[in-house]
Image (tube, rainbow, N blue to C red):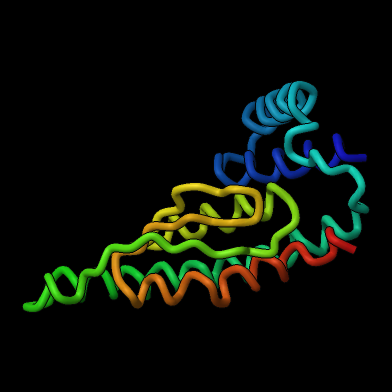
Amino acid sequence: MYRVLSFSVLLVTWLVLSGLIDWFHVSLGIISCALVTWWSSDMLFSDRSIAPRARLSQFCRMPGYLLWLLGQIVLANLHVLRLAFSPRLREEIEPQLVRFSSGLSTDFQKFVLAQSITLTPGTVTLKIEGDEFVVHAISDSAARGLTGPMTERVRHVFCDGEQ
């Protein structure tokens, strides 16, 4: 079942990104996706204890999270832009390392959170030690935003996987 799901995810991605729907490109996509599925289907869904219905639910919640993340990236870009053009630049930039516990259970959830933090300007995930994240933040404002809704939204996307 997971190989079929892996193949389907890859083929849909191929079709969307290629933008070419003709026999040659579709057949090339089918062959390529079949080979990648055969070689690496265990990598995409490494935790096989989660039911396919729960995976589908997670997949349906992901676009909402990605839209929210895009909004946060825009806001963080505006914050960094404001810092860059501030006449009091030296007072406003306060680089710091922030340690916090995420409470996320799987490596993939931690990966999604770490990449989301790093994609947000002004913050970079440096290390994940068990449940603890070490993040560099450019200012107090960026540091305050780390322990808030982003972790909860990642948890919400994957909540069926923990049941």
